[in-house]
Amino acid sequence: MSSVSYHKKRIEECLKKNIQINAREAKIEADYILKFALKKPSSFFISNQKINIEKTQEELISSILKKRIKREPLAYIFKEWDFYGETFYLDKNSLIPRQDTELIVDLVLNQFDKKSKLNILDLGTGSGVIGITLSKFYPNSLITISDISPKALKVANKNIKKHKVSNVHSIESNWFAGFKEEKNFDLILTNPPYIAKGDVHLTNLEINYEPSNALFSANNGFSDIFKIIDSAANFLKPQGKLFIEHGYTQADKVKNYLQKKYFDTIKQHRDINHKIRVTSASKIKV
Ligand SMILES: C[S@@+](CC[C@H](N)C(=O)[O-])C[C@H]1O[C@@H](n2cnc3c(N)ncnc32)[C@H](O)[C@@H]1O
Image 1 (cartoon, helix red, strand yellow):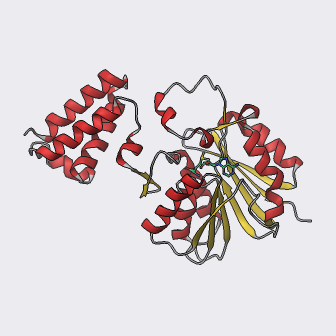
Image 2 (tube, rainbow, N blue to C red; image 1 turned 135 degrees about the vertical axis):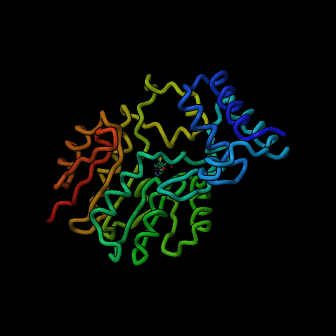
Image 3 (tube, rainbow, N blue to C red; image 1 turned 90 degrees about the vertical axis):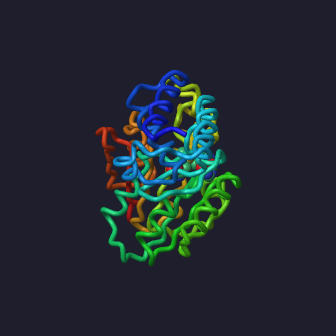
């Protein structure tokens, strides 16, 4: 048996050597792995560096490292990942939620009172993180989450159960194809696939574990964004709002396209790195 600090060093060295990540990233991953293997919060490790860890935990760490050096992302190894301070079930059938996507949740929280009775659609929900997170802040609201992938919806449905939320229901649908044109929604939120096929900036091998239909879109990454904008107004109440996450290089085109398609009050929102990553717009009053 060896100490926490011994294992932390061992994990960091193993990751730096085998998956070529830098010292800072290796430290962050080692912390995640120890927290997961020992089932302890980060605070535990501040004053317990010298305690010995059990054999079963050592074995668990070794099995995690074996998968990780094959570039499997920690989120899929752990079968869970955090989003907006909550832990969600996850498997390889849905995208790993990114911290960038928390911006959409922040924007909704900044604009709408928590007592509001909203009818919200989370389109392309994946693991369900956007809709389920909002359902907790807006208990009087109705949240629909939808995805084309039945396997992703299975993940989302597990999260509905895990989080014990009763105001969320899921629908399998190819964007809006499964919905009636009833102009029902106050808000449509979406983080669609928007990466151009063959994007040369994508060098991390971990991405190969994620479902490609959650990441890539034709027409230089715009195909799904444009399809959603083409139809969204038919499903929004008058002055209902659409929020779209996109790549920062796509901001101008998304704005121009919205202007052509019955939307105004277009606002663009920056992430913590000051890049425009979400565009919101209101359906034109007719
Ligand atoms: C970038 S992922 C976002 C997942 C989740 N909302 C998140 O932020 O982590 C895009 C999601 O859109 C779904 N999707 C792709 N094409 C779709 C379509 N034609 N209709 C509905 N959903 C689609 C994918 O299955 C995937 O779950």
